[in-house]
Length: 160
Image 1 (cartoon, helix red, strand yellow):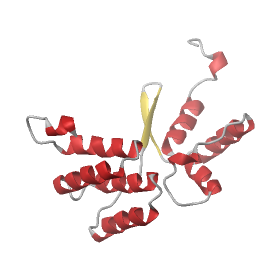
Image 2 (image 1 turned 30 degrees about the horizontal axis):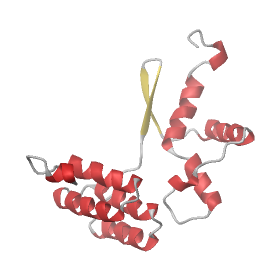
Image 3 (image 1 turned 90 degrees about the vertical axis):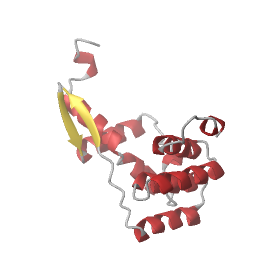
């Protein structure tokens, strides 16, 4: 806040969004609420403001306030656009939506190797098994699966 208060010009939406995201990461609810208020006043129809605030509440396990933010989004008709990841393979870009078969194979191999997912990143009030399923279906994992399908195995790559 010292940096923001010391700026020669008023903070714009990018500054408040960055502060809000940092507040979630550091679980600083009070600073997050302040940043969200400023961001929402600048961009009232931007779903990022509400999603980041919702995630900030979820990070401190305040499910009631998280639900209020999501309800407010509905009342204001603010819609969150689903995540969409991209990957480039052999100089061609691909938008990814689902690659379930390869992803399930990777998840199984990871689990066999002893991988335990960090479910603290799932900001929903659901049981651990459901949190693992949510993590397994994240778009970045789809991107990795697609990349593995479209590239040769590591041990046969000439550039290893």
